[in-house]
Image (cartoon, rainbow, N blue to C red; front, side, top):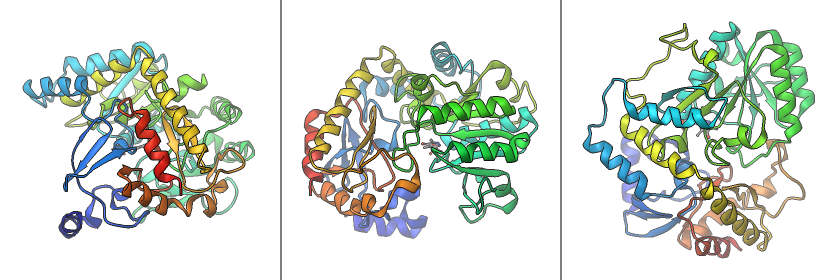
Amino acid sequence: MSEELFRRSSAVTPGGVHSPVRAFRAVGGTPFFTRSARGARLIDTGGRELVDFCMAFGPLILGHGHPAVAAAATQALSDGWSYGTADPYSLALAELIASRIPWAENIRFVNSGTEAVMTALRLARGATGRRKLIKFAGCYHGHADSMLIRAGSGLAGTGAADSAGVTPGVAADTIVVPLDDETALVAAFAAHGADLAAAIIEPLPANHGLLPQRPEFLRELRALCSRHGTLLIFDEVITGFRLQFAGSAGASGIRPDLVTYGKIVGGGFPVGAVAGSRELMRELAPLGRVYQAGTLSANPMAMRAGLATLEALLDGSVYGELESLGATLESAVAATGLHCARSASLVWLPGGPRAAQAIRSPAQIDAALTAPFPAMFRRALDAGIYLPPSCYEVAFLSTAHSRSDIERLAAAIAA
Ligand SMILES: *Cc1c(COP(=O)(O)O)cnc(C)c1O
């Protein structure tokens, strides 16, 4: 059945999918088509039930179809689903975030993580009057042109386009620096400091495996940004509201100048957000000279779903529950001898045997670690378990997962 749907889909959509990793090219085989989802389960169009460890790549910390989120969205639906005016729901969501996260005094809602990053970068350039950006190899920030850049040749050199359609002019303004490398960081600031509008980082990189950074590295980055008048942007699209309510910045105690959110903030609906100090955020239109707008921004259904999701996270018990599930998963995987990196409810299972040391940068990821992934993915799928379909994607736990789901996963991936 999925073969036929995928054939039809490939006839009307590039690669048959609307976001590349969904095509299963990294794992082989034909992607299944999901008909519905509930809790920690996906049901495909053939009626097969799969335990979902991908969870839509991050937004669904409460699981699929959570009753409180469903109730909020259903109520929103009956109240009309797009106003194009000011509304009380985005106000409530902004107040909830601003009251809990001191560095998010002001918030602007957009429709995706990509859009949040785009806005944060333009804001940084507008506010500083500078041109260049630092990003880190191994961090993902969505698909804005200036972020689709890989390291060029030469230390502290400018980047090269990592996608066709990105101009050399754009690439020249993005400096790509390795993670976990203070020396390279210092060199990049020494070479470009006066032109650097912003440095953007996933404070816990979770899009190229899970690459936890040493606190000293993040502190050095914070210090260099402050010294050079460069704005530090934490891209917390995955980590925001997931590691803890205040995300990675809350967990590390290191404060960004701007922060981007996505995924959980919309509870599974299309929402992104950029946040920062009142002083910086007033650079955005209509107050300031940095333009940004959106027909569907702060869509009321999405705002109410996001609000219901964040409200469920407020008392903190969810994080305790997820930590304990995560620890169970980690020890069950350890018993199989496979590599497992974990931070709270983010889990990276690259498929290979346990590595001797913590992996903090893409350069440390070798073929032995990832080559077994497609076979492991397939083993899991045959056993009714859906892992994210790439060795570089992390798995996501939700409150809908049970200990027996985790035991099934561990049994399935054991070779
Ligand atoms: C997912 C993600 C993005 C992009 O968000 P989209 O909603 O897919 O555009 C940006 N940054 C990080 C860290 C992400 O994980």
